[in-house]
Figure (cartoon, helix red, strand yellow):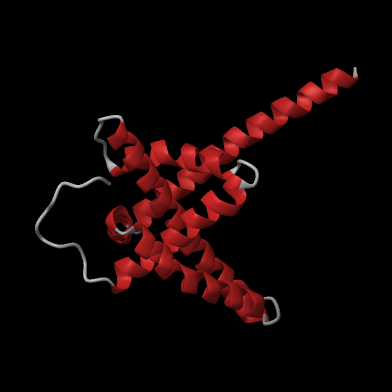
Length: 169
């Protein structure tokens, strides 16, 4: 009887994990539908300049951390700042997952649409972020910070150069 309940817990956790992955992927697709131009500029900013995007994301992450600490004590700001942060965080995860999918498909010699890149990269990003220590402290924070930095590069950057040079992604 005890093993039966243990197995039920495992099945429940597995089904919950799959549902969370599916819902989160649907939310990321919605973010790409709401802001397609911005997400495309962010993805192109992350494509060629991932370390610069990471450096640009560090101060933005710090600003959001300070604003969230302030939002804890100010009621009106406590409602607005988490919503704004959630939007930018979802956009950052969407861009990071799309970049991972693009690199993975490119490594396999395949091309794909932005949606295919996102559908490929999101499960990889989730699973790799769930790995203890390595995922929690390196992969997930790097993905989020570089995704936030790509938003900064997309908003304040000069854009991509007109000439196209074939390089490694």
